[in-house]
Amino acid sequence: MPAHTVSPAGAPTWFDLFSSDPDRAAEFYRGVVGWEVDRHRSDEFGGYVTFTHGGHRVAGMMRNDGTTGTPDGWTVHLAVDDAKATTEAVVAAGGMVVVEPLQVGDLGTMAVVVGAGGAVGMWQHGAHTGFEVDSEAGAPTWFELHAADYAGSLAFYRAAFGWDEVRTLSDTDEFRYGQVVIEGNDVAGVMDGARYLPEGVPGVWRVYIGVDDVDAAVAKAVELGGEVREEPVDTPFGRLAEVADPTGAVLKLSSVRGA
Image 1 (cartoon, rainbow, N blue to C red):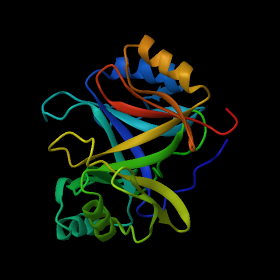
Image 2 (cartoon, one colour; image 1 turned 180 degrees about the vertical axis):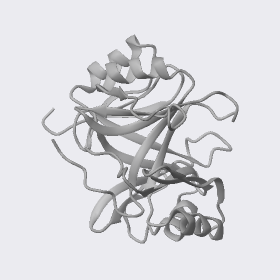
Image 3 (cartoon, rainbow, N blue to C red; image 1 turned 135 degrees about the horizontal axis):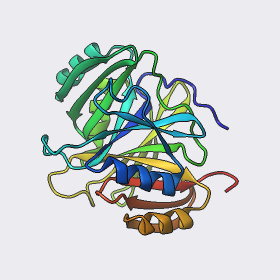
Image 4 (cartoon, helix red, strand yellow; image 1 turned 60 degrees about the vertical axis):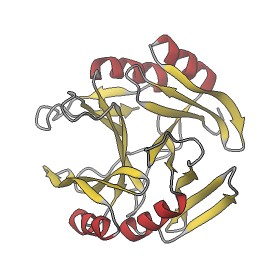
């Protein structure tokens, strides 16, 4: 089982679901990617629960009560060494702080910001050091920012989150893609979404979750009330698909090595 070491600053370290129907979401993700729900300390933190796989922490979920007007969806959180200093860097880079740095008990400190490329969270580790496994079935395999302003998003993340090295894989209008490199490791991708993102949407983060059988997982997603957004397809990076859960939150599914 690939254990995940603590993410370095600037790399994805956590992701959580904002869901208007947590019980249905729990059933959906249990069936599609094999997650269980850990409610330990949920009363202490406003009903926030943790998705686990094989007893290991993977992701989080909180109820969307509709008061914010925000649709259901996933938020990716990048690791930071100092949440307050990072929110100041976000503002200096032209972004906006949506949720000011908030200490979450002994677990860590969170904040949410908006900049070029849309919304993103941040997490300053305390006792909670992010997801505990990766690159296997039931765990994240990749994180990807789809940005309407590709160059502007890279500049923003460089200034705010220290993305100083981005390896260009392709640089054409048809397909523009870079990989973020931190401490010598590829930690996330950035895709130019100018051609396909809806008007007025600056960008969106997508999370890829590994499954043993992409086609079976897609069929299970439909059975449990989800929707196929992109049919399974073989790529140089494995077999991939995109589904939406019953309330519209979007997730990528990917094959894993040996599956």
